[in-house]
Each structure stands twice: as C-alpha cells, then as structure tokens.
Length: 75
Image (cartoon, rainbow, N blue to C red; front, side, top):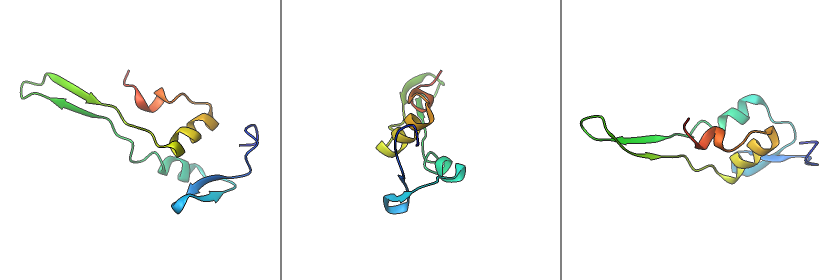
C-alpha cells in the first residue's frame, strides 16, 4: 500500500476503509472465487466457467504484485 501511496483500502464490510489489512481479511475476500466446469455424462468437458474478480479483488492482487491470472486461468 505504501508503494501505491495508499493510506487505506476498502476491505471491511460495506467497503469501509482499512489502514492495516490482516492476512485473514485478504484471504476472506477471495473465499468465494470459484471455477466451475460443465461435463457431459461421459465425463467430457463441455465448458469451463472462469471466475470474474471484483474491483476490490483486482486491486488487492495488484497491490500484492500478483497477476489476475493467478485466480482466473486454469493451468
């Protein structure tokens, strides 16, 4: 946050500002990120539904220096 010249980030519920985010809170905002796959009865993959990150999640990844692909692309 210091490198980005931010004094706080809206991580608390109702997007209230947080000056010192805990690891627990950072992980909490990613708890609902999920990838879903649709398979036929024979197991054939039909489609993969990649997660869509919120602006808040994107900002945290940027601050951590992590690419969004860490959460949005399956290896």
